Image (cartoon, rainbow, N blue to C red; front, side, top):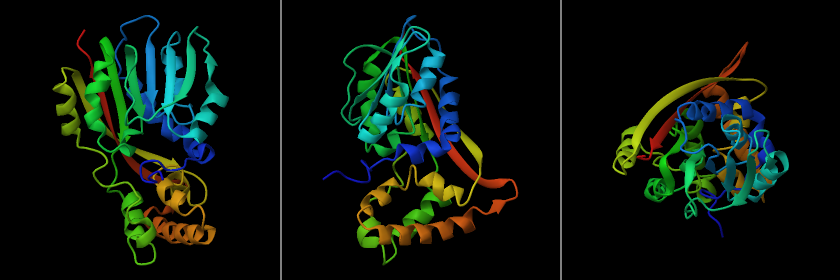
Length: 274
């Protein structure tokens, strides 16, 4: 049986409901990636999801052969349907099933990227050596991860899951507080691999629209393990969502212009020695 904490069932439609906000950090990450070593680069996107962010790679490097990797059949189906095929600049965009916990480059890559995925992979920093070793000289490894595990969004979810009503089913399925390392830990790990490394944090203040938009946001991401566990019990699922919704309403009050969701993210770009 798969672990819902590390392999939840994904819903591409729910995830894409906030696609613009979710894609912005990836665009900001790509803006800091330097020139790649070849004119028609080979690029891997680890944890490509429904492919909407992967398509941004084709805009930045039109002649690239880009492969998005994911272990969610639902996400891969959406990516294939919406984005696979030749690109306008003469490159190609394709998608393949892979487990990031074990995936190792089978050919030299100019760029390996990961967008809001590594937080789901226990021990992901231990994979950096293999990923960097798969780069061409002068190639880059770049990633961004949510860095807000202590924000009300997650803290309230964990607190609720630990109450007597939910503890037996949910306490051990949510992302742990150590799922993302400190900026200094990432910098040290990548620099010791011989990479010129740039690490930074950004806090976005997303203005969300609609009814209970913070709940709607987290139903596409951090809440997926709980929703996976409760999928066969609709009554319990709705009861949990109602309790969590009420907590979020208090923590993230609405304003006339929308509901503000502060969201901190951590970025890293590591360039292999040429």
